[in-house]
Structures are given as C-alpha cells and as structure tokens.
Length: 134
Image (cartoon, rainbow, N blue to C red; front, top):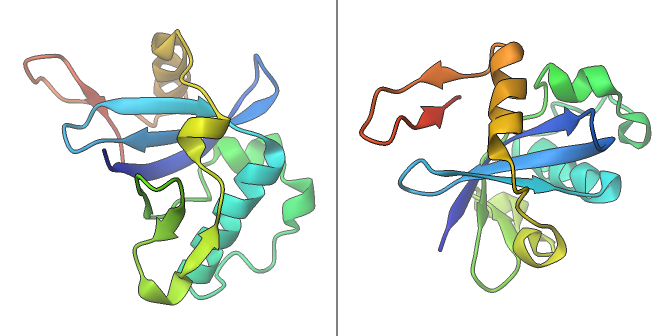
C-alpha cells in the first residue's frame, strides 16, 4: 500500500501533531506523531522545496504554524518502512515508519470536524461521501 502525505496539523485534544495521508482511493488516514517526527517530515518537505521553510525554527513550531497549514509536501510512504520524497534529490532522509511508530485514531470524524472548522475540507459527493482536501 502506498500512502501520499497531505498535511500536518495540530490536534489540540492530545497536544500532538497529526499527519494526514491518503491512498489512491482518496481514503484518509490520520496518524498522531511525535513532535520530533513532525520536524523530520517538515525537513523532508523543506529539502524537497529547495529550503523554502528555512527561516522557521522547527524546534519551536507553534500551534498556529500547524493549523495554518504552512507545511505541505508530497512524500510517498513505501512498504519497506522508509519515507521518500517524490523528488530524487530528497533521497532517503527519513528512516522511521509512519505506520509502525504511530497509529490511526479511532475517531476520524473528530479530525474531519477539526479540518472543516479550519476551512480545510471540500465536500466530494461520491458514493461513500468521501471528504478530501488539498
């Protein structure tokens, strides 16, 4: 299974960053991740985008930074447990598996509501009423 990274946002309930990934069917997966791992992901995005986040002190990422969705990128999750940027120049820079070291929250509707409240959702009137956002 290949999941595409979409966004990181901050879950106020658990005081933790949440990584949002989707599969080819536009089903979304939500992973609460450590702050350190969030920084690694943001580093990957920065490297992939030529250092565009360089002015940010990632050690002090704020709640607002996550909610405003400043950090986006295209990272592919591969089955061998490593994360790669789509661009080859990014290389193998994260050696920690999102699937193994995190977990899917049992209540994705909570996160959908969070995203909706922050104007991050667009409704797709598909057969399964799938929510997707960009």
